[in-house]
Amino acid sequence: MRKGKKKLVDGYPFTFKHRRSTVHLNAPVSTALAATLTLLLSQERPSNRASAPLSTGDSPLFAKRQALETLPKRIRFTRGTRKRCGMFDWPIEELINTAEAHRRGASVPGVVGYGYTRSRLGLMNDFVIITELLQNYTDGYQWMLAKPEEVERVIGAAFELLLSLNSSGIYHMDLWAANVMMCNDGVGATHAIDLENCFVQETEFLSETMGFQFGFFYLREVNGVVDEARYDELVNKALVAHTGVDKKRFTEVFQVAKHSHLGRKERRDVFARGLVNLR
Image 1 (tube, one colour):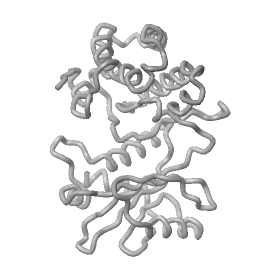
Image 2: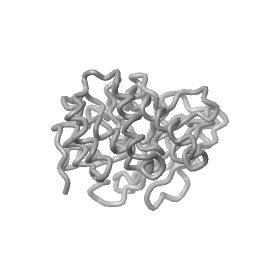
Image 3: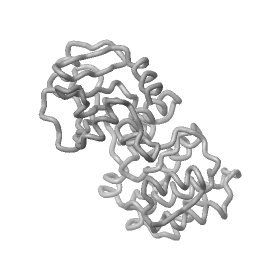
């Protein structure tokens, strides 16, 4: 992480400081942004996680602030170390994955900066990620609630986005409807958000990984809106052009993922080993 952390700092050379808080940014800090950051960092630390748009007077931004609740977590963030499972904590994973996905040209909001607040002892107490704000966008879940007759439009947009991300080596393992941002007027590209549970590397088990991705999208909310047989038809249609997918291996994982929740460890097993292990 120290190498990855330095690489991110190198990409965000402009620094803003307020009391014991530091924010690294990819562009010079305007007067309006400085005022906004001061207000953000002066607020009481959230008990868990808080997110909201930022009014800067410049380009619209979005901030996600995460409290570091435990001492082990604060030590890991301060030292830049991984958890025992080999992964970083969620906010660090999201920062690294989103920044790299955007660098590769994937449809994700760009990372404008990131920061943290330290305690008097020097340990990080919270962590904030600042991204571009997707204006005039609605997440796919809210879209389905408002327009249930357009569920297949949401599914089609999500499938196109998923396959586009995969083609860039970005494997989103938590892509459900609410993490698919759709342009309200249909002009802008569909974007993915919340990339903390994501792999930015190639997999030797593409068929199994895609089986999980398509199955998981059905499990999270879509299963109550569209008939399973119809969903399977839409999946098969989306896979027509993907001759590299082994249908048997895909289907084995797809059928499990459609009906069983797979946690972070199980998703990693699918991606790295092609295995589905249910607890």
